[in-house]
Image (cartoon, rainbow, N blue to C red; front, top):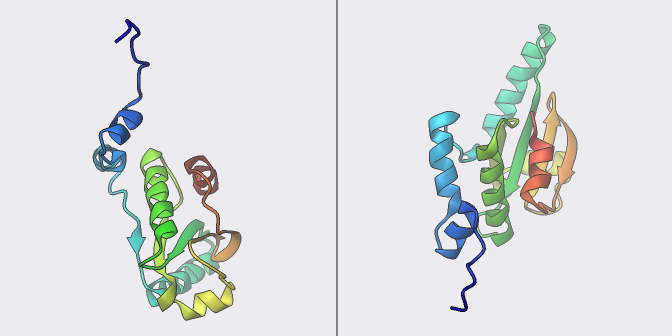
Length: 148
């Protein structure tokens, strides 16, 4: 060594260099503070039934609110990367609810919203799509889209 000290590293960089997943550490912290981090996987029928219940409550004068649906396939590497980024966003603070659906088993929603590829993140307001994103560029972009 030539007398120079290495630059200080953040915990994320250190964990990545050591080959450990930082997401697990974030998930442990989140479990203590806000509850589970992982995306909740639901079926198309479950979501359609929930949407119908939300419509009924909206007719009674209550707002249905915002939510996001994350469409993936099982063997998609880009989907897995986007899912990890979403888990980081969910662990970082309050976000709208996000549910994960397998595009292969959602023919009604796929045709209704003309989903062209995966991964696809659709942000809904009162059950109506207001944003449809295919490119999950960064954690910062995702957190802006999913902010409460």
